[in-house]
Length: 288
Ligand SMILES: [Fe+2]
Image 1 (cartoon, rainbow, N blue to C red):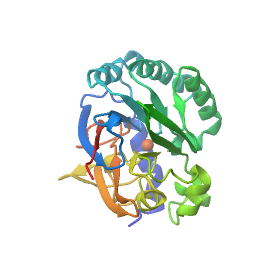
Image 2 (cartoon, rainbow, N blue to C red):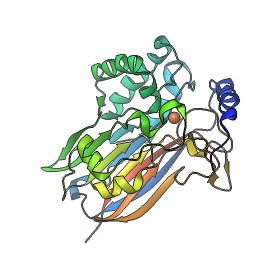
Image 3 (cartoon, protein in one colour):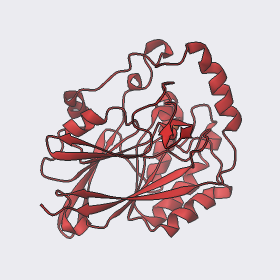
Image 4 (cartoon, helix red, strand yellow):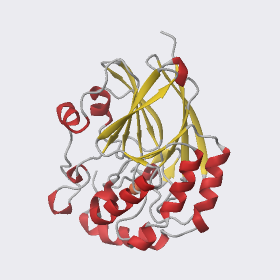
């Protein structure tokens, strides 16, 4: 059920007023994800998932965040977009670079754009270039292969078109949905017998990601539903009540067996009863 349009502006003002509150409640959540397609060499790999930092302040150099990440010993780190908020200055946005450089020292880092990067493309381009320069692998409708002991998995990074987040005229109604064919066009056909990890900022199109061939999709965007009551997220960035995918693990059948979606509640923005979150997925090889 969409909220009335006149609420957009007051809601944005309320978010903005709380953007820079220091964080006290950062939580790490560990889940095990099994797949028969995961090669033995990758069994036990720890994928740390950061998302939706926006303008949240984690102290000088984001050290509180990076030192907490270090304690959890990631094998790889993925950042699924919205590392800044669209209205921030480029000077402020660049304060994320030392943080990302520090993360690269912990583990290989893979980055995909969110909707805020899409709304501020010039600033985002400067950031991508700088991030690539410090060793972050920026995946914009691109993929990369991770190899261990002669085996491999694939990491695909999706950059959703802006119309998937807002329709023409700024409305949240009639958002564009991608078909499997369109995902093929953006990402290519996934490798059919490999383990395919898909990074996609918005989780809304999980059924299509599963049908496309993602074994595990990692998403953010929904901020845990902003306000959480009894484990249920209340509101989506599209101003809808009770969004389907807000936080944690979701599963559905696909042509390949089971597809898993892991959604991070994110690191920033205004939130109630909804701790800033860093999920960690431990990949496990499932015996056939
Ligand atoms: Fe976000």
